[in-house]
Length: 114
Image (cartoon, rainbow, N blue to C red; front, side, top):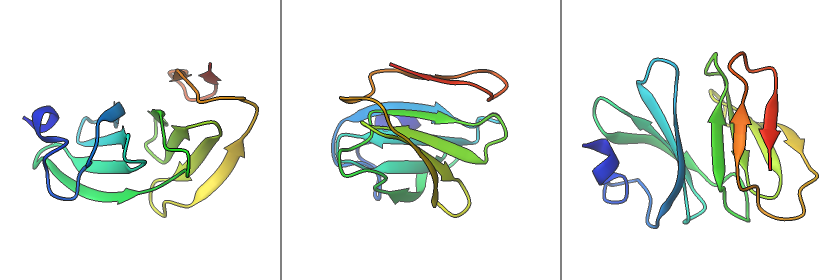
């Protein structure tokens, strides 16, 4: 299964995975690892599609907008990434330490962090 192979798949993580989130269709999975990578996976094939390092401090939490257009990553700073371009479109500062939990409201209007 994909979950069992996250750390072993070529192009995947080289360290423990901190968080995961699926897109609305369940066809794409995003993972955040201790190796400071976020990896986008094809669920059907179990293969990584692409990866990037969104934050020098590493990413602890992930969320995906309901429309699948934005990935939210949380370290000490929360960043919003365009899924197509992987460009950071917004930074939300205010935490003094790593974000421990993050939740996006069902409609995508509110993002809560702690």
